[in-house]
Length: 141
Image (tube, rainbow, N blue to C red; front, side):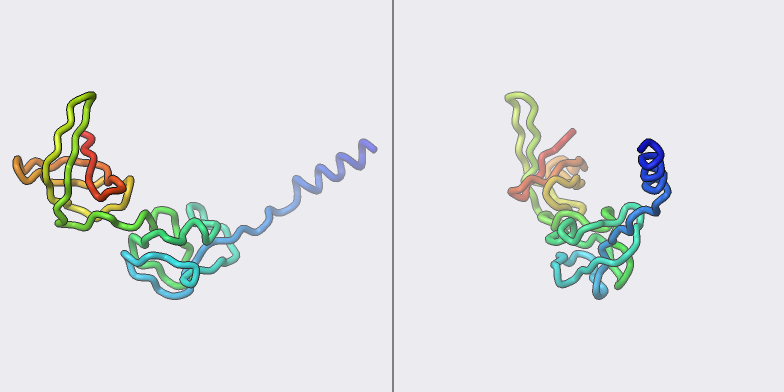
């Protein structure tokens, strides 16, 4: 009985890993395009950093051009941009009971929860903030 258990354990340890799937585009996808299930498929292979399920990519925005058959890396997609470059945004800084709101100009594109650089239109100071679901920017410092 003990020998059988050891033989089974040895077979499991020596067995090759199960093949993993990787998400790849079915066609070239331009940067700033929103990904849909019709754009993607699974391919055999395991690429470090690549997406393993189509659900992880659907509804996200391509940050760069994605080429047919090449694995999609997590760093190549993100939340759809809510703030566009040169867009006027409401900047808010809050600390305790103090809250300051002013207008700024976005210097980059960004989606909800992503960092974006914004120039304060009054002082011309460039600050970094996080995009809020309402399309404003919560200044961090």
